[in-house]
Image (tube, rainbow, N blue to C red):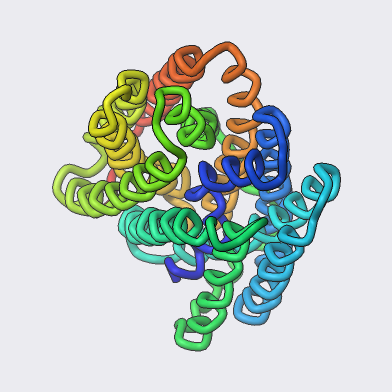
Length: 367
């Protein structure tokens, strides 16, 4: 299930390679590349919203197959695109399809006994395969003239199609009231959690999408920066595994400190003139991010076995991930230091929202 769930948003994990390819292979400026990346994200946001209405009404397995086939087709079509306008349309369509797939998978994960564990395993796959995707696109780029990174995405979509027959049934929960198809009530606490997730994801990708560019500003070759991002994503595997252990032993208590650490670690990127320091800084960013994300998604999904709150969390995440590169491209024009400082401040604001949402609810925890 985690393998299927990571295919839709895999473009997020390899966003530095995508933005670098859009600039070098497609000839786009930093602002234009950020806009194309944002179109993918905003399309994904729309897809996550549509999932609220579509997922409960269709059998999940045929829906997943149809979405994956369309996702692969959109990635292949991207390699054939020649203008920025076409790229925006194709990547926005890709986003809509991927957002629906993510919403479907999040709803299924929310039906498990402890969503923290489910999302933890999901992000092990995210960062593991994301690192593999960055390496594959970096190594294959010299042998291709355009769009190899999108063919890497298509290959993962085909892999996900092969595992669908092996997944369990995931029977839907029984209908309890005639209002089962209505949107859930969002109290202030849940709104704070969704807002915190939005800010956290916007900061993550707002900086992450330009890591390879920042590496170039610091004097590093694109091949080295791409390899550093790939290794950093694999550090996220360790972070997600550590989160699984912490959540079992300490419940929600480590969450806010981990989110703050994920923000402060971004400051290390600015001191990355030395190659080893730059690689270590990126590893620290992804390590702490991977520890915080499963907590954030599980917190938003808490107490709703229908999966609707998890789908709403996916919507907030997509909105943040689509906003991040667009705003990041504009802030980056003022220098890498300004972009890093903005990302840190945004994560601190997210940590405050998470802390406020946990405070009146600290007595109730998952087993």
